[in-house]
Image (cartoon, rainbow, N blue to C red; front, top):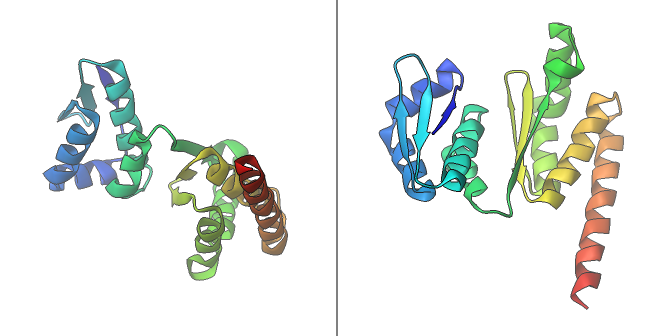
Length: 175
């Protein structure tokens, strides 16, 4: 049995839409119970199914929609979290970092998602990514550049260069 906690806001979303729980139970071959104290219990005959369900619910809890979170059932998809609160202790600085990653009107986040093809969620003090290892690596390059104080232009150049290199490697691997 796996137990986990997610934010009260996301837990309310789970409680208000029972279809979400059913989708996860079906995709992960498990049973999920929402306890009154906010604990989410996952039961399955197989530990890997519990692990998958835990990852899916945790990703949902970090702000992803359920369709995106369910991609984690595919073994080629990974989940990566950057905790901005561990990088910066001042709440005002964490807020600035989140703003840099999101960009004006969400432009920076959208561009990073578009180039890397990774799904990104900025929720609470965290930045989470779902994608294959290459997609996450590309997105993380841009995000870490922004966290380290680099300009958006520099972040995009680094990410695009990595994207081109990965694309070339994939093409040459085929031949």
